[in-house]
Length: 130
Image (cartoon, rainbow, N blue to C red; front, side):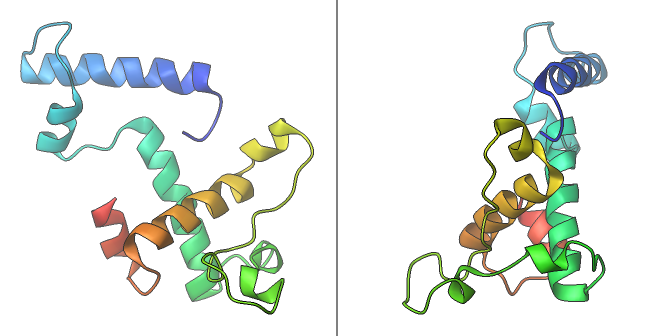
C-alpha cells in the first residue's frame, strides 16, 4: 500500500495469478486463504511492514535520526489526558499528495498497530501479529 494504487494493483493481480498457479486453483478462486496457508505477504502488506519497521527502529533503536524530530507524541502537544495521548502526532499537510509520504503513512500505521497490539512488543512479534 506504499505507492500509487495503479502500480500496486497490477502487482497484486500478478501475485494472485502466481498463487493460483502454485495451488492449482481455478482462475477465479479467492486467494486470501492461499496467502495465509503459504505464509506469504501481499505486496501492499510488505510496504506496510517496512513502514512500521522504519518507525519502530526510529523510536526504539534511534536508527533514523533525520526523521526522529518529526515523531512527537500527542502528550507533548497538550497537558490534559486523551485517548490518543500515547499516539504519535500526525503531520498536518494541506495537499493530499503529501499524505502519500512515507512519514505520514508510517505514523498512521504505527498508531493503528500500537492501538491494536500495544507498544511494548518487539519488532518480530509485532510483524508476526500483523
